[in-house]
Length: 570
Image (cartoon, rainbow, N blue to C red):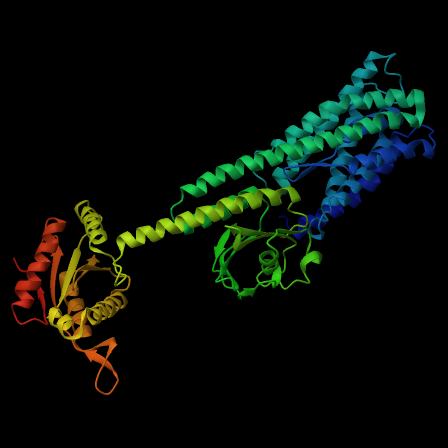
């Protein structure tokens, strides 16, 4: 991105340099007497070549040097300069430069003006003249090679300078696009000499003998690059699939999936929508310009918007510009988006979600990429399902099936980990609250075990809400509950324990499955005895902390009359 001041400066520089520079070139290096009808075939050939660019790493490469070499050797610098300006214009129109980048027209015109000027001046400075016979003068052949090499070298130098100084791009500057341009230039460079020699002997008909094979070569190179790019995408898709399968959390799978898509494609916006109960689409993941945002959006029905269309038809869609999709109610798609790629996420022949990628640039995505994204969506669907199964299994192994709180096994592991932090100085304090419901057996005997379970469930919910994020609540066994409070002093733990005791004793519990004589749901009052211990002052290890909290519970609270809080005292 460059500022509007620089864009205006580029236009000003073009107006100041190019028109005047071409006129001066005409005066200093006047072309030989030549008919316009003789030049028209070269204009057509250069226009066709410019309209068939090879796009590598989003950089258009048009194989024009061999034609410009023949034109220069035959007609001189002025004709070559004018034809190159026309070719650059056709190239930029062909690749559909957006309005925001319209400054690229004068910028590229300036660049190729200087390329033509400097390489031509070097040719003339070494004693070269246009129109000579290559076969009769080897030195002229050498000068032609110097012209071609200097043309390519000056072009590369100016291009790198623009990237570094104007666009502030950091290297590497010599990527795959540079390699392809170098190789194709070396391949096509000799064709320029052949075209020049044939045109001297055969006239315009020589352009057919050279142009048709070159067109075939351009098509072959384009197909080769496309197949090579597809193969690379397929390899990347396989690697990403393996990486997704290694993730054991569904959120990690989702984050990695979107991250890899943004790395592979020119994505400005990425959205993942989940199909809820086969009725609605819900936005669950939203990334704009690399930043993860809160996925807030209206729910979409099947057939509504781009996502709903993908869901309904179970087929991917590709739009190259806003004109193609603006009539569709797109919902969450930003106004600045142009290109859109939507792919259904399918599992067991059912659409379970929709992926939507968007870019501000027109024609940012290719049809060949649909296949790659479709494959990745299949990997993603399997990986998410496996991760969710793993999370469910892990949750079942860590949670109490009745209350939903953590179970004894998870709590013991967590307590051990917290004690290690305490021993290594990563924690200063660790308080533990152990709670036991008073006379719970009589509750079961009076109202039944189902009612007892209802009390345990409601008590677990009360404890979860009261503790929140300051600690961890677990069901320790039977009617016992335990609360672990990192970095909490014993005095604060005792205050919290007293609040919990009152929360239990002062608010009756509802028995949903039992009715009183008036047909209303029964309310039962219960109490709890609580013991508190704190490390390191009360215990040197995790088992001692539990044992001392348990001692405080039974000796200090139960034996003293129940419905009270007691602390461990050495």
